[in-house]
Length: 137
Image 1 (cartoon, rainbow, N blue to C red):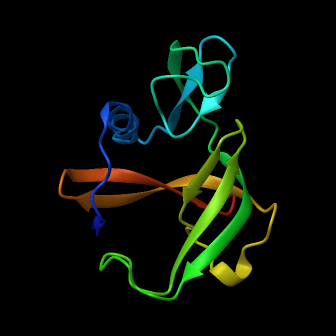
Image 2 (cartoon, rainbow, N blue to C red):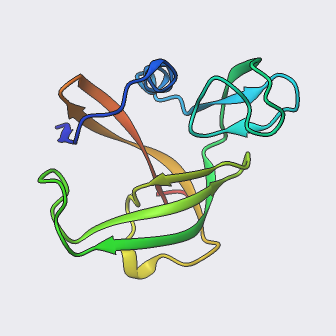
């Protein structure tokens, strides 16, 4: 059953990102000039300002940079305690997500995590949410 989530931001670039998640593909923009992967998506590369890019599939490998547990409720869809994790994707960009199959007390800086998918829904409809958990889980 899909988890109710707050509405996603759906500008033209984010909309493309979410369309790839329909088939459980994690894709980010890759600059056509300097090769930098970028997140969040946008019209130009923040390194070289090129407007050329492709959407490239990612490996799904990440490592934990940090995490925090919110003990106060901000959205009814995320009752406290609610943990989020800051990751460095193997391709370079930082990505904020949710831990899956692991408790906050088990997270460690530098810990490898792998891409997983949660079914979610918001006012725009059902979608797949990229989350990260222990390898092999």
